[in-house]
Length: 182
Image (cartoon, rainbow, N blue to C red; front, side):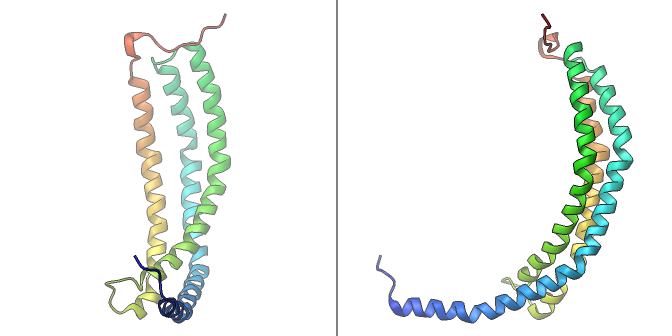
């Protein structure tokens, strides 16, 4: 393996300098698209996720308590501790989930168009000039809707399935987990 020659270094430096305006132009275009689409994506995600959290929270609270009380996996003392911990977690879910949905909407709405702008000039793309402007616009909006739909599926279907598994499981060896109070 031979060391790099100085002519190779200067050629690499010249390639970098030629690429820099191209990169800056794409970055500025991505920033403009991000600023224009960020409010819409944030609005979709913040309203959708917050509505899911607030709308399903009472049912999640009731179903969590019911499943903890009805499970045969743990004894009464552990159930009491789980009920206290579940109460804290359920209220933290409200406190963190709603501002988190706004933050997620802001980040996704701003960064997705920037990433799509750079992806538009990748290998194998035809008509890259048009794709630089078009890619990341409608896909950011539909992506925001997809995030809300996927979260709905998780909160509406998966959560209840997991809690049912907890409720119907039997402890190994037939003896529930318990903490003894002496």
